[in-house]
Image 1 (cartoon, one colour):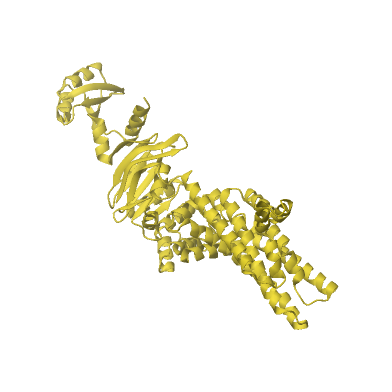
Image 2 (tube, rainbow over the protein chains, first blue to last red):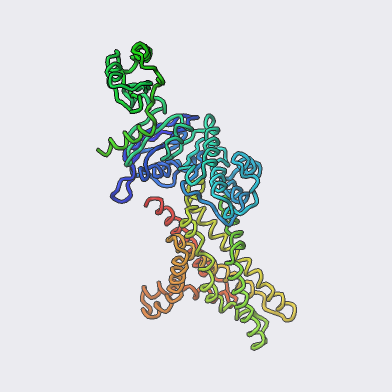
Length: 306
Length: 237
């Protein structure tokens, strides 16, 4: 649905993004992850036809974002980072205006439906300037959904919302995937694991990783890790654990807890359990430790700097 | 075209939710009313010449107030990003904004038709100059507004947009004087031709000259073209 190839954009002499390449399949929710000023907004602005790239190509639904800009724009719903709203317009009029400039038929029905999806119908006749931030955010989203777009591009859709609103917006976005292709930028990591199928991590204008959320986690681990806790902590426990086949290293975590790194696929948990029990230490806890997206993100973005 | 009209309609509505339209319309009517009643009492003449002759200064003063926010405010508030990513071409945005402002000007002019009604009821005015006078105002007004649209596309600051429009309008106004300074040379005749008001006076006198119509139309087209190019340039920055 979306193909981005070697996209590069310079602001004056400074590259905002360099050689950005990724693909998004139909129906996917792609998380576009990166620290602030990594080039997320620039990439999205190029995709939406707001600005042309310095070099490279991007295609949405087969249309080039520069050469067939109008065709691309018809198919994209876009919510920029700072939601552009006309504060002096009522919600219904605002949405009606965008329905009109998009040349949509059945304007009223579409406006009503977008308001219903984003639950802003109860404020339809309120001036946008008088709405709370959460409502304004949802009005922005309703605007992006008006024309039932194939592709939805959301730049930091949950920024500035309270926790309850964040959950609501995430649920909403999750529900949009499947039929629509969604690109969602964020620097909040749990958002990605909660809403996205796939992740592109971008740092200093370059793509540093692109994969499904699970595969990215696995690939970067390189080894499995297990957390184990015994009742009677003793230095001999570490030695005992270290002798178990498949175990690469043992790191005491205090209070009887140990973090054990072991070779991929060796599955030493049954052996660890029986070793501890036979030695009479009293096994309290034994669980696998996944590397969180947060750790991956830090690892990738700090590796890049080194 | 439909989206151009949607933008025009939105701008026109927008004037009436802000105080701008009311202030400008009130100022316009006060000035026109003064001119009309003074000249009617003084000359006892059933015509609107005093309004027509003074219209250039009124329009130069008031039209930057109507156009300053059109594009400058959109780029300041960031709403330009939605307009320029909607399936609308840059020139359609510019044309829509211009037509919105022109709509307000026409509404203001419609209110002055009251004077025409008074003249027709109590006197026997010459109808030709009335018609040509109004045509002249619409063309001159369109030109002053298009210059304002252009300057509004150049900046994010409404005040800067208004001042630039003033300066642009005054320079065009004075260019006739510059033309005289250069005498009959080619340069002089170019400056004389550019004079904003020289082309207008014939209309006020009841004369519709196609070259004058062409002057205003080309000024409008040129300004709107440059404004849409200026929007396009913003994309590349």
